[in-house]
Image 1 (cartoon, rainbow, N blue to C red):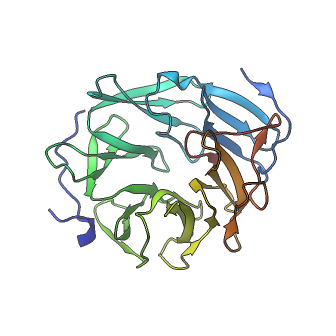
Image 2 (cartoon, one colour; image 1 turned 60 degrees about the horizontal axis):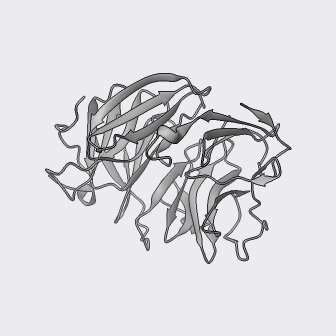
Length: 300
């Protein structure tokens, strides 16, 4: 079997079994939408227009608070959770009010963040079964956990609006076709670290990602690569606003809080030292900064 560095061929799939409160208007919001994020005690949503924040899911039962996704239209949320012995992996799909739509299980050796396709019919994950260790596979499964496609060697992934999958490797990016049967290289950029935490703008023109502890962006075809943020600490989890005008991200400067920040998506590199508001202000709710355990996601 060839790996992603050899043009990422489709591989056979053999391994899967089947209280709200009113807050003041938030700063740094960037003109509306809903910010979903994983706080310490609950999974929350903040209305960036009105400032209303509410808890959706008490995620104390979730073993990996950082492994979730919110559908592009904001209508569903998916969480990944391991059993105590890690033998079973449960994927739970929720409504935005926290009620459960459905659950399905896979056997162990699952990792990565589950990510909905735009129509929510497919979910991308990573599996690393012992029979092929240390190789990793991006698996694309349906809503019952049935594997439909698999690619070898990717570290992270993100969906385009038309249902293609962009994947990152140590050697660069690969983009599938709409059938999810083939993938080809994108661009020729070299990176200090493998690009991770990918997020694609809604118009499919740009992708933001993390490499070397900082946020970068480029056009989806690999052109116009540029570093977006710089600091003495680390910037995490870039996320496009629905209209593509802003990037939301988490800034890890205190060691105890991944602060959610917001900055204009255009322009040059933003310097975040010292760690004040500056050009990337904190997103605030009720006069308090927002600390997210994972990627902040902004939806309509």
